[in-house]
Length: 473
Image 1 (cartoon, one colour):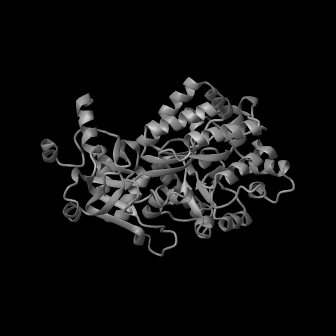
Image 2 (image 1 turned 180 degrees about the horizontal axis):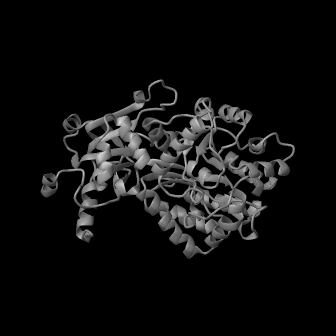
Image 3 (image 1 turned 45 degrees about the vertical axis):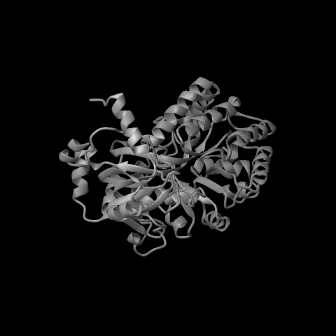
């Protein structure tokens, strides 16, 4: 039975009061597990713990509940005992104008784009359509536990502005770029370079560094950008030194062959971007499934980041990423849903699929050198602190280090009887995290907080607590 409006408002009021202590099992990673012999060295958790949030919505501390209650005696206590409190997740690659086209059947990348994607993205010229899609898009991200995302925006300035507006309304940490293309794409999605420069300038003036929003320079991918459009991208980066650039690379073998036809003088796909001044510490490259060793070395040298999109890569038959080639070199790697090549908004799904991809490489294809067996700690890192690091946000979000923003999830195991029983049949936090990565879904997410404020409430009795506890609420 649905809760009354008064109960919903009461729950929101309770959970939004700051400063506060959120009591429950608090868990996060303190750093990267990929460089360590023992993954558990980076894992910090407190069974009866708490997350202290100050009046500005930042982390004031984590630890055992009784210790924090003594230290922060004036903080309100929000009791979520039995629930698991995790950092908000970071989606490193997703397309807003593909919000409503998940599950387009049976094609590889280039045909999929022409047959399904470009016609759908053309609809975003209609502002009413774009506005409704933005509402659904950010609602789904938050409901699935994502609190930060690097987003390919629409090819239309107004539609991209509508995405910024909705993200700001929801207090969502969004890095959004207007998708730029002026060739090899349907005419309705093209924008001449000078118009693109002017449109990006207006979006930067209106939205970049406003509250939790940032603008991103976004050349769609090399085949759709002329030399003049690449020059616009470089010019924007030089004029705004804190802005990052995002694009696609080496997702599909046919795509790479096309790049060789279009750019015969360049040594590789990466070289197309590199020669035009777009590869550096502020560069985020989506996919990189088939990048050569030389390209990967250059990514490392440039301190660029890569986003692994395992569900999308499998859905479209693009390939299985050799993750070890990246993490062994210390390259920053995030996870991305790549909606709508990916088949859902959940980063739990991406953790699940990432594990499977590496197991296939390791055992089905015998790739002992470049596959990584992904533990619960590694998967949590990729979805939280690893994603934040790839986007240059590790000083703001990603774990529960003091002074970071309090973006977090409350997982209620009791919302699913089987999951609750399975979790009880584990003996370590690492095992619990791996089960969550394998079986997690938005149905287990009781609440999502952004800057310490409850944004996605699920009011009602807390299944993880006893009936006696619930009777006292």
